[in-house]
Image (cartoon, rainbow, N blue to C red; front, side):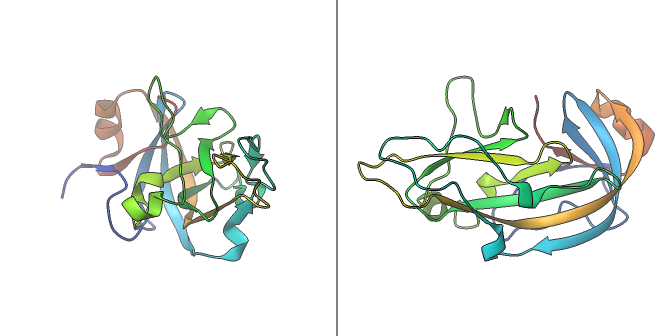
Length: 190
């Protein structure tokens, strides 16, 4: 068994980053924060996990919308592992927290559209990891020349209950030395 496993979203049905008893080191805010999974439950495809940014005029943008229904608890800490899909003719920008835009390079931001699922049927390229304090935000752009009555983005995945191991590290080698075996998960903030 490997002492360190690097988790990344893989093609195919979504699988949890770990099971109860597994240790995780989650990269966020330029450090590895360490946890142990104590609880896991699926968040299935559901109308309750579809978020509507509302009507958007042709060529306009919705503005940031907090996904309040996905709010996680801080004590005990929770984590969400989520994939998303567009239901309408929108170009959606996904953020982990209010400021951490996902799926970006220095010059571009990749957006989720109705065509994303045609190229990536399992939606693994849309996967994000969120902890308390960095719930997802989304905004939608209407790229069409007609007004949209709704602009919806749906989510599914897993919710984890965590035990905070109260250890943080800046280097993988430090994590391995202190807590192996452990799974490393990049949440963002690099």
